[in-house]
Image 1 (cartoon, rainbow, N blue to C red):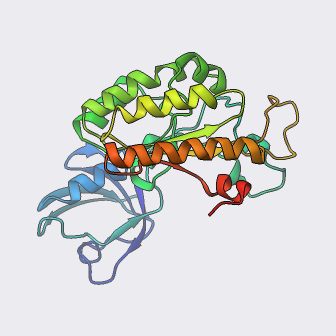
Image 2: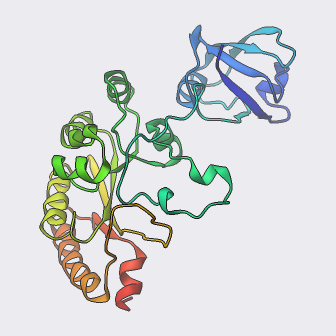
Amino acid sequence: MPGLKIAYVRDSSIAAELGLEPGDTVTLVNGQPLRDLIDFTFASAEDRLSMTVIKKDNCQQECVVEKELDEDLGIAFSQATADGIRRCHNKCCFCFVDQMPPGLRPSLYVKDDDWRLSVLQGNFVTLTNLGPEDIRRLTTEHLSPLYISVHTLNGQLRKQMMGNPQAAAIGDQLATLARARLELHCQIVVCPGLNDGAELKQTVNELAQLYPAVASVAAVPVGLTRFRDRLTPLASFTQNSALALLEWVQEQQKAFRQRLDCTFFHVSDEFYVLTGQE
């Protein structure tokens, strides 16, 4: 049975008193399969819980815990999910992983797209692999913040840029999450000639209409390396094009500070470095 493997037990903690050790696996909490660290976090906040643990020698141990509300059990796990990491099935024309040189450590080539890691660790996800059960869990358990790679709210353009028909649903997905009052932080990888100009202005304007559920939007320039063999031709920002974008961004930021009482829309350091601005 899958579960979460214990990596660390704090001395003199509740877990230590129960005899739990690194290498043991927690499989059930309150009789329910442990899907991920989110499940464990919810359950362990209560003042009473039960756990089924598979010891390192494959023996099963049943633990019943009575404690103060929110008292920490003193456990750290070696992974955040019990069923592996959901991989990315998009074929983004700007994907940086596709542009990396060979010979690096294997983890750098892993394309994760798991909303649970977004909630737990701040990873950016595309939402293209969300099913009805994922939406139900996000909205009913009020799981956030979520960090979302939006890129554009033009469904057809997003589908084209990400090479996935599911990408076109982003507008409806954001609206559903916003109605549930989740906290959303959105990212745009700006590709000159694709989602810049009027497309970028429209995307930022529509995201601002979802404030405060969409709490912030960040834009970064597409990153291009020399390892782009047989990939979609893309252009980099020039000093002039970056300056034009930055001037527009600063106007928008001023307007957002007046209208929303926050900057809302941010751009990455590269734009400032490329234009020589503070």
